[in-house]
Image (cartoon, rainbow, N blue to C red):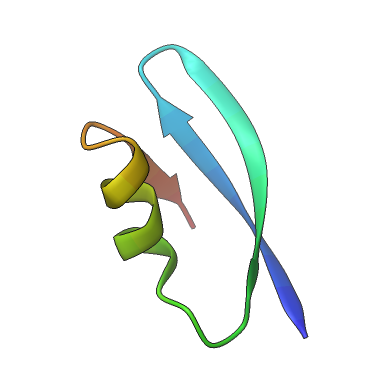
Length: 39
């Protein structure tokens, strides 16, 4: 099962689909250290 998350990086906002068993915050921080997740 996949989940979609809204990721905010600076002024950009986009949707990212991740596998259920991974931590979306860790994934986003590893790619964009300044990024955050909108729940």
